[in-house]
Image (tube, rainbow, N blue to C red; front, side, top):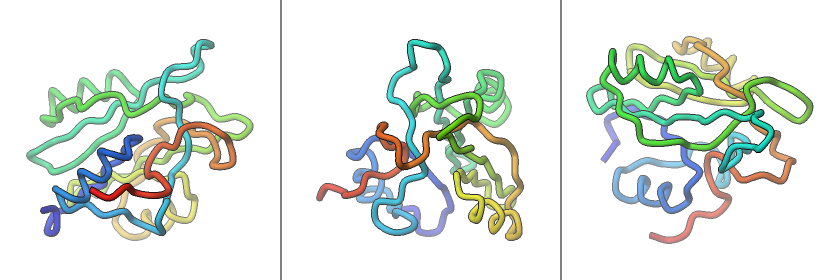
Length: 157
């Protein structure tokens, strides 16, 4: 169980979310159906999107997301993260209908946190989290694209 550890994990897979909650003690933050934003499940033919890599460090008990090939390799070589796969595809640049996905880090507890909310970003920054980057841009929630983080209803395990 994850009860004494702090780790934020993000997924586009409803079955994985159920599994993580049921077998590893993760819980969904916020109201049921909390969604950070929308991403694509495959790259756009136009080449406007980049993969979001999800990595995990057993030693740090931390999930790390990045769109940077260099940051992915550095995390694996320098910090012992292993690649879990591609979470989805996001835009590299802002634009109409897009919101930034902020990356924050809390070094004392070895945890990365991601949000599109300005309020959450500001609150976290005041409470021990360091802003590291904007890793990409998600579609705003009104858009009709696949969900990025948490499905609206969790199936029973």
